[in-house]
Image 1 (tube, rainbow, N blue to C red):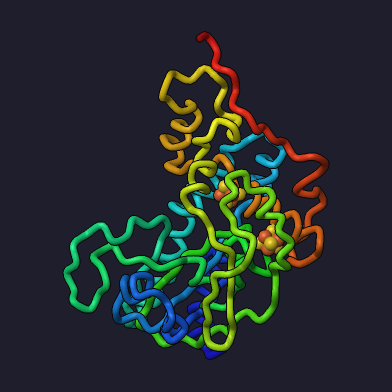
Image 2 (image 1 turned 180 degrees about the vertical axis):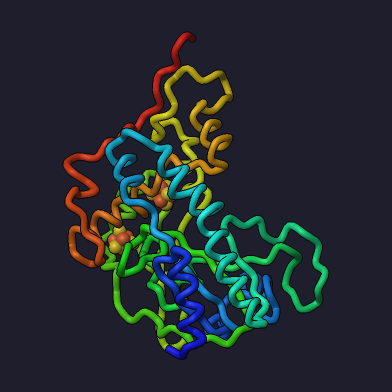
Length: 305
Ligand code: SF4
Ligand code: SF4
């Protein structure tokens, strides 16, 4: 790695990034035009990906059926809105001190809601970039059958963020290994039935093909947000007609993020499988899944009616 790229990487690591990779724009040649990095920064020459791990204990506490708010706070709100912006800003300021204009790319997105103002753009602002594809393009890992981004360090247990810069940085080689073994645990444990059974969605970067199964985002979203009373423990039967659980509002008010499924299939079942089969590096003394998993399957009876 050249010394300039090494210096940028050093700033990212010292600031708290666990993984860092660099993708030249040529790796996005086959990207849909509306998801190209140039929809955010037309002059970008390099896309930098950083990955921050989700604390495993936040997943374990949900897996045990005990405690959801550490995931919503630490691994959702804090990573998205505190830790990532801080680290991205450090990287951006370092690059800009060296004359390289750089745009931090946070999560979440609210893309293409504005009017088109440039002829060379496929849609209006805001532009968008798939952060999971960015992680792949920057050599950090691959997509699993579930469409979740997997790394050899953490499996599915991280979030990816980006910096688009006009700096020329040395590309990180693409990830050549295979993490997903198509075990199907994600498919079977997803209560929304949102994950397809075959990795039929394919894309190629340089000479490597990546693939995932089709994902029904609408079906996922209902279970992910805890809107289906059959699968969320936060419905207790005391909700007013047409109202949602008080916990959902608490999470949105307090953490601005709401996850109730917390990846029963695509995150927790996958992580457990990858840990137990030794397909990722991080190992822990307490298994993520021990014995039968909690499962509700029906809505609670309405109380007081
Ligand atoms: S659970 Fe199995 S099939 Fe699904 S993404 Fe993980 S390794 Fe691949
Ligand atoms: S978040 Fe939950 S509902 Fe959505 S795909 Fe993952 S396991 Fe299925």
